[in-house]
Image (cartoon, rainbow over all chains, first blue to last red; front, side, top):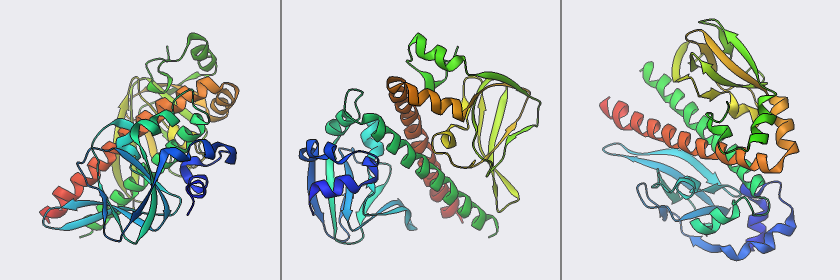
Length: 154
Length: 150
């Protein structure tokens, strides 16, 4: 898969013209990940944002004595790892490949440059991020709601 | 006047004025429902005085508290940028004075001024990230304490 194909189909770059992508491809590195390989773990320092070209990645949290609880399952054209990149904090969850996957990754500084005020289409990227993150907040809340309900009813 | 709301942090005087002239003050008596789940999103509310509770219904009956907001905070903005329906309910816990910005006015302002649009989206994104961390932590806490306790 060509980097540029993955970039232009990703949700992160929705509503951006194709002419933009050749200028940024060099910032992204290709990454082949085998099934069950971890991309990062909860508590790690966050250095990269990832785009999925092909495959499947789960975002999970580990719960002592119980096992793992999934927060999200992500597939082609989605992105993850943005939280630590944007606020500089630690990874809040673990990302693990559920299939052999093909990803692109971009380093923190490079990504922050892409959303800098003076960068082309930075407002569009910000908007896409806001849209996705609002949705994640809602999903987490919905999920919490349904577990809460299950628990209340025993 | 509006700089205290994070969405409008670091705006120039002209930019602030552009927004201020479109705001109107509205009063809600204690216990008034300001909006309900699934309502069409038409405004953002900035609390000048009083307290507002945001909550959701679980299975259509049990109320689940989400957050209490007061002076200097605002709500209803998530839908305002995605033209979706209301995700939760908002109720005045006390008498409330709120500045209201119509979604249509907000969109007009953003369309007109690219610079202002960038600033507002950046402010919004920073806050969304904070909230995502909070909601993730709540989620983890729930699993780590409640479920393990059972």
